[in-house]
Every structure is written in structure tokens, then in C-alpha cells.
Image 1 (spheres, rainbow, N blue to C red):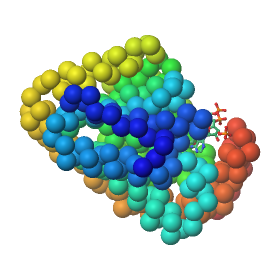
Image 2: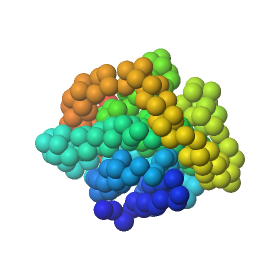
Image 3: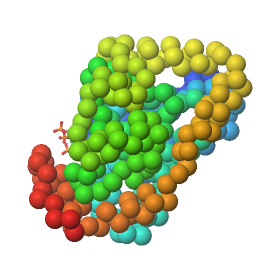
Image 4: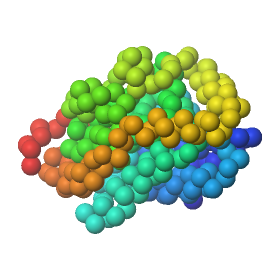
Length: 260
Ligand code: COA
């Protein structure tokens, strides 16, 4: 379990809440494992009809994988612990029979956006901004990002977002189909809750059959092996070292990447 993750069930709605605001809710291995344990519990509990994933505060939904933690790992730890734990969590959220809503208040970057992409529905506030800045660190989105993003916004916009690492507004992300709804910051908790309640009050078997049918056509399982290999490879390039060093030094411009 992790002190940075809380879990509660209210009626038929469960909520997993990220609570590491001083690190903008960056995900470490303990947080991934704690979330995985809650997802296993949800999977076994048929009283739960909707899962909400949210964060405390208003600055960040989640700013991705904990760069300090993963950049210290060996290749084997990276493969066995990091990529697999993160990917398997995202897959297990996606595989839940019940609908999952990501309530995205603030920044959703890298692994944070991948976490939101594991949900079925994404609600954001006008202050939300999203992006996949991994190329600025010399790595790739390694928890399903390249594959799932493509399913949601298409290959061309996926490439734009990952190639550039640009951070886009919630309104633009909504126009791309990446976010379902954008509401005022003070309304996001209420809107998330009313949508979760509306879904939970509908017939659960009909709702879950619909999720299975819609996902059956998505081809979401293509490519995860390639992504795992590329993720493990890029982390040990000179470029990744330069990217991580720039992050640690709070350098806001890209280092001179050499393609090595
Ligand atoms: N991993 C580890 N720590 C992170 C983090 C991450 N992904 N994202 C933010 N943090 C930490 C910062 O290191 C800082 O910690 P510190 O106060 O101990 O130095 C804290 O969160 C606040 O972030 P800071 O950078 O000071 O805030 P900012 O407003 O100046 O910048 C961001 C915000 C999001 C632009 C910047 O934090 C950032 O670029 N984060 C990394 C995003 C990313 O690349 N995600 C993909 C990871 S694979």
C-alpha cells in the first residue's frame, strides 16, 4: 500500500485518489502497486459499478512516472518492475468490466495521461492541460501511450503530440476527442460525481455489455510488445541521460540530443 493513494467506495461508486501534490502526483512503484491492489479488489466486488480516478488539489491530475525513481533503475529492474508494473496496471484498469472515469483537474502529462487514457471517459476542467513530453526526456510513453492514444485521437495527432511533446489545452484536447467534457474548475468534482451516479443507476449488465462491445472493435491490444521493448531500450540511451539530467537541473529547454 502507499500513503499517496487513497481508496473509498460510496454506494456503487469507487474512487481511487492520487495524493502526492508536492510531486504533482508523479507515480512511483508503490503507488502503481497500491492502485493495482485496489483494481483487483474492484474486479472482485460486484457491488461496485463505476470507478473514478482523481487527484487531490487543482494543479495536477498526474505529471507522469516518477522520473527520479525510474532513472535510477538498472535495465532488468526497468523491464521487470517499471514497464511491466505500469503497463499491467493500465491494462487491468482498461480490462475492468465496469466503466472508469478519469477526473482530470490540472496537468495530465506522460504516464498521467496514460492513466487517464486507461479510463473510458475523461472529464477535465478549463485549467487542465495534457501532453506526452517523453521525447524531451529521451524516452517514449511506455505504458500503452503510443497504442491507446492512437485509438482515441488517431495516428496523425498521436504523432504530433508525442513528436513535439507540446502541452495542449483541455479545449483543444476536447476538440480532438481526447477529453469528453470540459467544465469550470469549481464544477469538476460535481460533474464527475453526477456522471458516475447516472451510470451507476443504469442497469449494470447492459452498461458492462456495452463497454465490452465497444472495446471489442478498438484493437487496443495491438503493439504492446513493441512498446515494451522500445521503452526499455530508450531509457538507456545517452539522450535519455541528457533529458533526465536537464529535468533534474530544472532546465526548461531541450538538451542538444545526439541520437545516441
Ligand atoms: N517525476 C518526478 N518528479 C516530478 C515529476 C515527475 N514526472 N513531475 C514533477 N515532479 C516534481 C518536481 O521535480 C518538483 O519536485 P521538487 O519540488 O522536489 O523539485 C515538483 O514535482 C514540482 O514540479 P516543478 O517542476 O517544480 O513545477 P513547475 O510548475 O515548475 O513545472 C512541470 C511543472 C510539469 C512542467 C514539470 O514538473 C515537469 O516537466 N515535469 C515532468 C513531466 C514529465 O516529463 N512527465 C513524463 C515523465 S516520464
